[in-house]
Length: 223
Image (tube, rainbow, N blue to C red; front, side):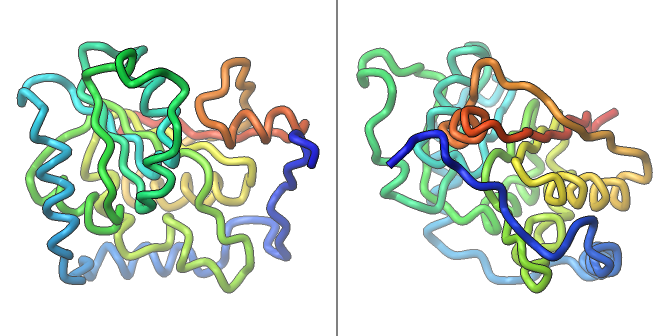
């Protein structure tokens, strides 16, 4: 099997979904009330147990095998970095460094982001940086509700503040993320192509090496 043979998500949808704005407005008007699972409460407590309460927080949302979390912790030693993924299998996969060399300013927790984001927001916590990296896209037109920008939890994401960065190899997803944020923030959110000479995640490396164009948005939610 060839390594650099990743495919771009294919869809009949070529731009921002026509129902996205209506869904975002509905979610803003009617806050998400789904009960929070106990295991997610425990995961949030575990994520903050090693935090001194003063170090700026970085959230690597959907961190997968955690390579990005490690890189962020190494690059930002004065921060507390939280890597969250819903898959215990992904979190347990071999890391790129021996355990003894892993940064001590980070933690991995298994949790559902739908609950984890709300728990952070309800606790009044603010992030310094927030990464939502590959992938989320459900590319079919009927998959809109499964993509984060149209999910009922979306309004909680900007509540966490900080600099939010979203990356994908599917431009529609990043365009929808920007459009949803614009409705919440009331201002323009720029996005576009970017190069990744030093890939932050295995997905990014695979997509880049497959010759795909990469897309991202970076927005200061407190700005």
